[in-house]
Length: 436
Image 1 (cartoon, rainbow, N blue to C red):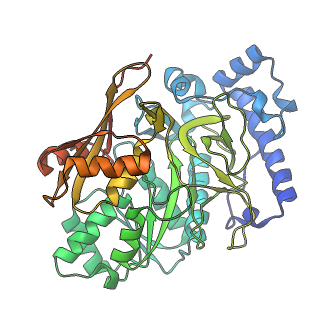
Image 2: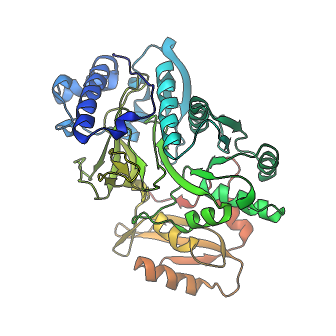
Image 3: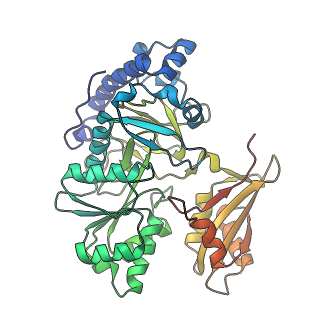
């Protein structure tokens, strides 16, 4: 396979659309040649489907069936396209919708990872003079911390790998080392800011100028801040940027200084939004995010269904980049709820509860009820006695057109489900529905 040159600062994102397309055609051809010759899974798939990889282009890419998370999990070993002697790092996917899967990276894959994060961080204004506090773990076979650390180093900035430490530990780091950027899950960054306030330190005067948010959305369908995004900007007096990634695609898409969606990197990935049948949808329409990560060697994928729902924006960005942008993640396909004839996603419920004063903690629980409807319960703890279950249900109905059951519980009970001791992220959605 021809080696990629993971250098530069993402110049491909500024090319004219026709040049971007020619570049992607060339890189896609190399990628498909690699998977057709080296990946046991795709060799078999192409043979059974009668697909000649040399004849596939961007125009007819949809002739290749999408690859699902279940296929990657069930035939995990068949996706390895290099000898084990070339594997230098092994991670596990987070397993948020199923059992964790192994993803193996070569040295080239790690170089690609660093390049991806370098140009992503640079796009939202980071530079060599920044000091970046990473509040995400590098251990437990988790890739995000390693990716962000590699990107910060590649950019020439300084990284502080404090990881999943206590708020007390992060406070001490902020006091002593004065980071200018925080990278972490939005809900944790909000918790950290509130802790700083409780200790007499104003987060807005801490020197933190940017928050790079991972793992949770901070914007809605209209690209406006959700309550968590508004709270973070106000609390920290900092610019808030959203980024999206997954272990399997070895690629992330981060907002630029315009804060208007995550820029796609044309030299690193082909991104489609597809319908239920796997057919590509036009820009602006919501569907499942499907990624073909270009230039990967260890476990290359073609048309990988992420399970996440979003949309593409193809108009030029104010920052000058011409590459398309990915909108906020609006929900997960497997988390879609059917409630009395209406389709909703947990993130829609979260948006209402985040904006409701007096609610201190909450989570959404789904269980099987019938073939036509799910049973949806919202467990909340409240700090204001006026926040009755009836009033909260009225608010949910006004925004969602359906009325899920609301249960008032103690803060301790709710927090025990939202913040389980061994979880990498807080858990706002508990799904015990029976799957067919």
